[in-house]
Amino acid sequence: MHEAQGETLGSRYHPYFTEQGGFGKNEYGRAESYMLDIASEMGLPTGTGQAGRWFGGGELTGLKSPRRDSLELLERQAAYTLHEAGQPTDPVSVRNYIMKLMQEGGDMLPWAKTTPMPDYRQFAGGSRNQ
Image 1: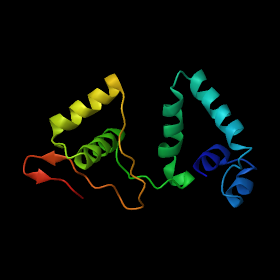
Image 2: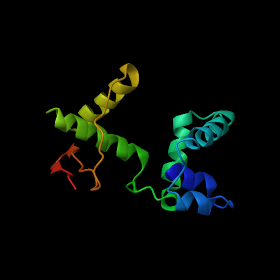
Image 3: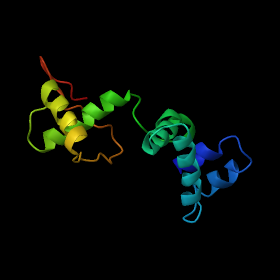
Image 4: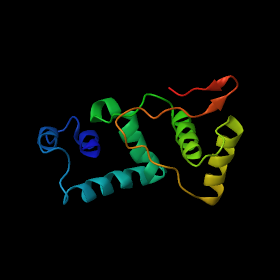
């Protein structure tokens, strides 16, 4: 849905894809490939290009993402993962976990609920759990 909304906005095809709820199974791959080619031509990693279309255009595409910068979202996701694993969520632990992911790979737990992700980061004076 979000890919179709972002790619067709302003075109004569937008009403069609809006009414059908996004690209169909035979349409998504071709449309996504086109956008991946554009990202590559611009020298962007394809995931960065897609994130820019989805998050940057979220209000236009219907993406219900929190209005925070990407670093805060990354820190919250890492702190949530650490919290669920019973690990500390202070700033140094969160940073070290993110750096380890970048250097060695690994996973972060997904947040697929409709409620905002709680903030499990621990700061001096307590948690910012909101």
